[in-house]
Length: 357
Image 1 (cartoon, one colour):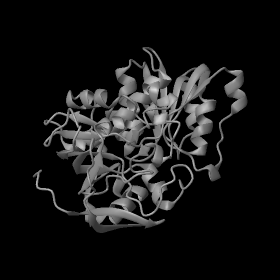
Image 2 (tube, one colour):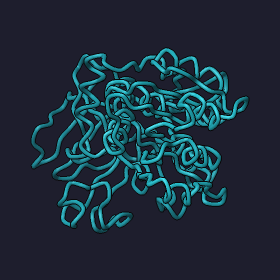
Image 3 (cartoon, rainbow, N blue to C red):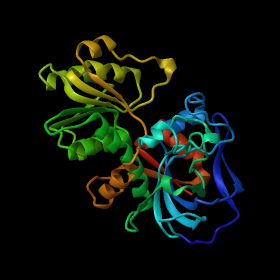
Image 4 (cartoon, rainbow, N blue to C red):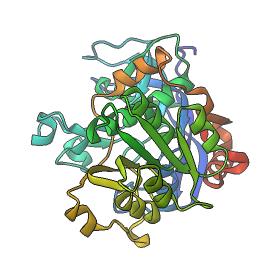
């Protein structure tokens, strides 16, 4: 990438729900303590779909007009005063959350759970959610929201590292220990990365439910058994494979009410349930709370990637996780509408969709 910085850029802007259009706008101004980055690639996430449709109006409170996109990697092209540890030419992976830095949660390291969540005036940022995202040619970020990656890593790998950082947080929070049986419900990019991290943590067996060609990728990534939830009773299959006991830990990555019920029905006594997928409240949630209580299960809410970006970059750079099969299509920024539709409809078996500004 060249370092010549234009005054204008293209960005995908949501001016009203369900209408994501590419427009020209000023390159964002960089202030003291910030870096200007040229976006190399930005991926789609299921949450982006919900944001565009207005499903998360209350959850993440994006004010319109809004630029979505939070899974990105790029290159630093300029740094402001007071910035240390970054220079033009550095390749970076973007992090989603930045806390106020002063509240109790931030001071205990949980900046992604900042007490001032949603309050821009207090300094809280969720880039791509309540603050401009990376479906654009340029973004401005503070150094604490950037993770450096080696020059040997592509921007596509950087986007995978962003998602992998979340998978690392999820697996470390719920705990996967040597000898555990693990079930992953949902065969999207996040689920496939959780699968690989669970393997690295020493899981005895890993099972995955999903549908379509994604299940073949799961086998390639080391799943012991895969289930097509449109054709099989996933709960019963998990119980059959564990002699009726259930698995040690379930990662719900699909954000579906039915798989929430599978999570509580297929987990063993004393097991762990990690809730990663976001369910539309209108759909209802089918977790069996009586079983959770009587079987002393532990349920973990999952969000963000605090402090795991560097580890994720290292795993990708050292080829300890597979990322190439996760990118099935790339689109130019001008084709954002087609990219959106392709991802949402899983057209042609699309898995990971990247936009290259």
